[in-house]
Length: 160
Ligand code: MG
Image 1 (cartoon, protein in one colour):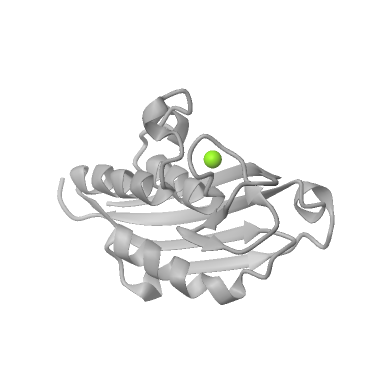
Image 2: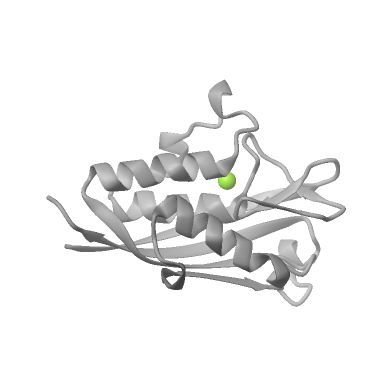
């Protein structure tokens, strides 16, 4: 059986927060605000996986009112989502995701992010595709008020 899931997330950019994307801390004068480490890319991917499983959304599984998730690395949340995926008999077929960020340049960091997703989701590197784009200085991403991410996954059921 084959499933597709879509995920979308936004976080606000603020001063005095680290910028963490795809589990990688990226030097920048602004960082993403949120209850966890606010990794907007991982959150979009988690929502895509949960969506493909027909299991609701990230807020249902990891409520931002739960102190257990305060400041938590989103890689740990991704691992929990991967465990849920496996518990339902699915594995990742492929992941395709895009981060929208005006600054900084993300291209030099995409390979390490790709390795993080491949390791956490137990998938080969060539099944993980990550992209970064600006929004041509338009809208909240272009004005560096925030960043957004979009993700699509396909899952294959290997056991009922
Ligand atoms: Mg989020």
